[in-house]
Structures are given as C-alpha cells and as structure tokens.
Image (tube, rainbow, N blue to C red; front, side):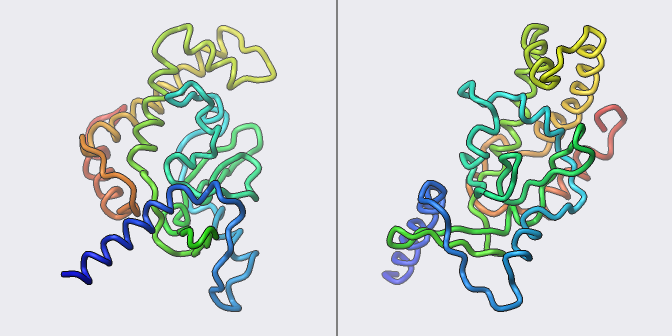
Length: 227
C-alpha cells in the first residue's frame, strides 16, 4: 500500500508539472536514438494526416472566454505544447494545409502523443509519449467560441471583419460567410453536444479510437444537414 501511495503521488506530481512546463523555456529533447532526427521531429509535429477541423482565418478571428484571441496562448491553456517552428502560432500536433488564402487547420497524432515533464527546473520532451491535455475542453470551447461569434448580427459582423482583414467585407460577403460558418457549426455542435459527456474527462491522453467511434456512431447516421 505504501508503494502504491508513493506511485500515485509521483504520478500526480508529474501530471501537475506537465501543465506548467510550457512557461519554463525551450525543452530538452530526450535522446530517442540516432534514427530520430530534428527533421523527423519537425515532420512528426506537422505532417498532414487528413484532418480538417476549421479554417485558419476563422480560428484566428475567434475569441476565447476571456475576450482574448482564441490562439493568443497557442492553445497551451489546454495542455497543448508549443511548436516554435509553426508560423501560425499553432501548437505541436496542429497543422495547416491548403492554399495560403484558405488554409485549413487539422490535428495529427503528435498532439496526443508528445509529452513534457519538468524535473529539477528542467523541461524534457518525449516524442511519442502520452500527452497531458484537455481535448474535450478544447472542443467545447471552440464550439462555444463559434456560437458566440454567430450570436448576433453585431457579433458576426466583427467576426467577418476579422476574417476578411485587411479587406472590408461587403454585405454579400458577410452573408456568404455566415452560411459557411453556420453549416460548419451545425455539424460540430451536433458532435460536441451529442457525443461528449456532460462532465468533462479532464486532462489526459485522448482516446482517439473511442472519440472516432462516437463521432461515427453518433453523428454520421442521421439525416442531413448535421447527420
């Protein structure tokens, strides 16, 4: 029992440190063998695996709960890890794909399989390790941010202006954007409301198989437009 209690305390300490280590500077990359190079790591962090979550311009225009830009902290508040090599302020495991004027943001395996721990004031990164992030809160907050942006004509006008920068959108442009955003939100909200538990699961590695199964069984079996 004493050994079990020690292991629990140690695990909690490591877990707690994983939430704060992003503020401790550049990590020390753990040696994972001669075949794992910096080029391999960069590719692992950003390789397109087919995910298409949201347009980058939309994500940049959204606001977080505190009124700051949704991407202001690079999503580290959810436990995502900083990726200094990403010019869009996206963390490890989030990538962009597509033409520059209409890039989409997607999620890769490295978002859930990269870990950092802090030991004696030093931060160590383990590529392939289980991440410690709250993916459910991220999805729920993203859903709410879009809901807030479409809550009124005034709110959406501000969102549309941010999306269209530096140009000023016409009334027709705003109306067309509203149709696209509403269509996106209809499906994502159906997924968030219909497949995520009412009590958040909290920080930890995402059960990718479970969440994909929930999405397929919960949102891809109904009638359009939200299925």
